[in-house]
Structures are given as structure tokens and as C-alpha cells.
Image (tube, rainbow, N blue to C red):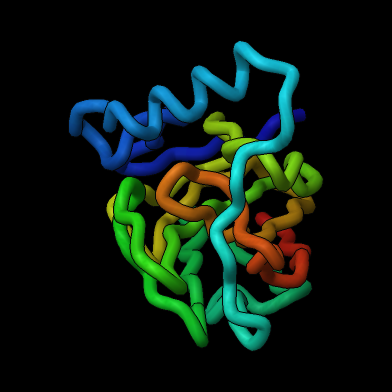
Length: 159
């Protein structure tokens, strides 16, 4: 069963930040990729020592709703989606799903939550039971970096 996720804003795939207009460069890049069978979209480079992790919750924690999730990042800068800057990106929280394809934009749905404003924490309401959480940094086009900057997968139980 899919988790119940309640956030202030879920960012659609091509929207830079909640309530803002789509960025033409991002829209055109994704459109070009989906209309062609050519090579993968270019991936932004990440420093080899970049590290993405959960500040909270702890792995194997048992929690009550709402669940506070705090993201940690070292070796890179958090910037809003659409900001094309070296060694930077924005967070995506994967809830109860495996990693997506690394050479395409990260999907946007209840299980692939985008933080396009540069957010570094959120509050979730999840269905009771066990859940997995993983963080994945995306570049200005929501594409994972090369090498990918991702956290370990953690497991939590919601009472």
C-alpha cells in the first residue's frame, strides 16, 4: 500500500518551486529527451566526497505521526531547482520505492517527493507500519548527479 504523504507542497516534475512558472530550459531538455531515443541526458558532476544523510529520523526508529525528516548534506550546496551552479542540487525524498533511473529526471509523485525550493526538512504523515526512506540529490533539472549523491536507505516504523 502506498504511504499517505502530506506536505505543504509537492513539486511537479518540471516546476522549479511550488507555485512558480516552469523554466523553459528545463521543460525543453526533458521534452527533447522524452521525444528521442538518443543518449541519456547530461548529468551534473558531484564531488567524490559529497555526502547525503538523514539527521533525523534514526534508522529503525519507531515514531508517531507527524514524522519529522531532516536532511543533511556535506560537500555540496543546497539550492532551489532550476539553479545551475557547480556542486549544488536540491533534495528528493524517496518513500517506499527503489532508486529511479539515474539518467532521467526523478519522478514526482507521493513516493518521490521533490523539495525544489531548497528545503532541508519536512514533516510527513505516513500510514501505520514499516516504511523505507532514502534521500537523492538532483541537479537543476531534477537529474541525479554523477556520481549519484544519495543517502543510505533507512527503515522506520510508524505507530
